Image (tube, rainbow, N blue to C red; front, side, top):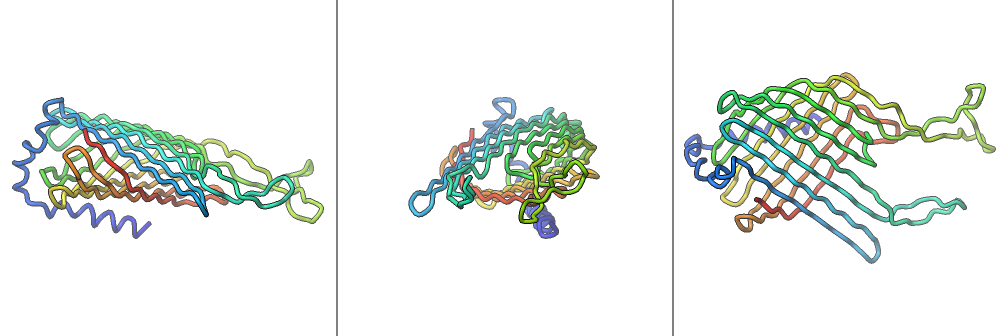
Length: 287
């Protein structure tokens, strides 16, 4: 996690290298958005399939909408990920066989509504929900209220922060535990091995602190770098998610984007890893 935080801080500092004189040109760059109340959006999709010596299918999709004008700073997103591949499983006879099965199934959605006090400061209410069949938590949801500040915004760079308290509820993933007999001692099989059972832990609730850092930097006229760091920290679990992406525009509407996501949960069940990583290559349509 130290490497992640260091990399994020370095990236967040990049926009300060942008020239302040680009601010006057920002109005022309956003003329299309100003004609429809400041609304802009983008959709991403990526798919990969392999056949032959191995079989796999991977698909991910993203939809994002945002609005920014003199009064509002609003955002909405919807993401989905699904993968299938060959996995080794044990059949009823105890034989190991290969099975084409789902290996990832996740979707998350969220929205934030920000009301501006002035061109830089705003109050924001945010909500997020995530479902993940293979993650540290089966589902998690949070709602928060906080303060936002736009530290830098011009034609080339943008840097903003959000921070505030929130309430989070989440369902830890299923886990294994020793099966106990009537006398409270572990049950063992004929070979003397402890028999285990699958159980679902109770859902957890806690007050958390939510933080968001969003940085954008235009390297060239058709190449842009984006990084978003989300933090939801409570006494029971600390959740961090960092999304970094490099996009190259092919036309005014179409672009190719390479993205890397890392997600971390501090509180996980035995047998579940705390860190998930995802690399994507998507086609992007801007509208």
